[in-house]
Length: 398
Ligand code: NDP
Image (cartoon, rainbow, N blue to C red; front, top):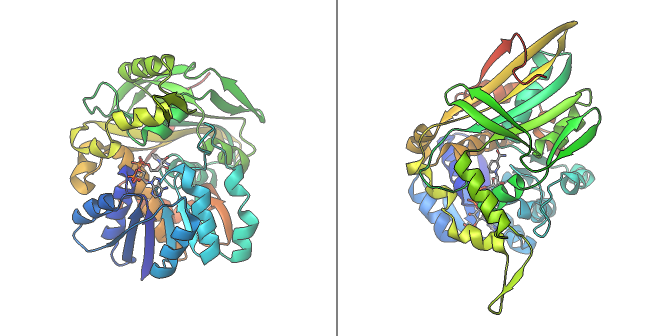
């Protein structure tokens, strides 16, 4: 029925390919293309059905355009890195193909992610009659859809939103990141930021800490971070008084990160080293374990969800919606750990809703602008079931 072009053969890309291959009645033709074709071929060998593979430099618009013209996909899934977002959106505009990604654009030389660069494509996508769905992983992605679903069914007004991202998995390394190390470290070392009373409040990096008892994992320290979905959610739900994002980190991770920062290994500006220009963070990435290799070693669960307060028919309520995902079960199913799994499954389902015309429209959309119901109905069947409960009071107040 539909032809899908997946760009990026890393940890998340592998999951997207596995899940698209499972939806054989929808995705009848799959092309996986990435910078290193051997990685695409290795993923293809894991599958029960044949897919095509190709090499592409997604920063080269002409190369992607040529690939699109030869394969003629119905949708392009950008599962490469945030640096490729604009180049791939340009290739989609040139060829009239719809676009989906899981992370917003970030310039290579500044650790700053913002939607403004992608939102600027709105009129061009509208004029071309194609759709761009932004941020369709787990967070951003499923958490945005949880919020939209809660607002649609359980609240007339959202007052506060807290997104809680817990990875209780243990891979046995003293320090490794569960997705691309460069993107992960840029995100975690940035200043904290949250939305309150119509403005952004900044904090020192990892300066605000709480402990939360996560079902399936247990009590964990979590830290306030700035995360990209806060920007689009604050725009979509302007009535909200406060929106925050929290992520758990273990002591070993934080100690290593502190040392690496102190010695300059997380710098993103080039330095001269014996006649070569190197970026310390990119060099560090080379030394760290590849997140795609963590699957067989990682044990434990993730628990990611939203706690929302607000009112319905004049009554105050506190609503908690979350998913628990097991690293080893993910590995058994698709040979990847749960962080890649929780990102890749919503990307596949988003693409399915696009190619079947359930999510449709011309322009650039963050997922919370789309109808959450068809997504919420199906996501459990694809491996990420959600649980919900109403609480007497928010565990995060005051
Ligand atoms: P990886 O680094 O494991 O994989 C990225 C892949 O993209 C690699 O195969 C890489 O090629 C390829 N790539 C990079 N540059 C290019 C290029 N110029 N042309 C073609 N291919 C390229 O990253 P992850 O799989 O961990 O993450 C993928 C994306 O998912 C990231 O954008 C990340 O931010 C996002 N993410 C989103 C989450 C969410 O919940 N929304 C959570 C986690 C991740 P090569 O192998 O040759 O290096």
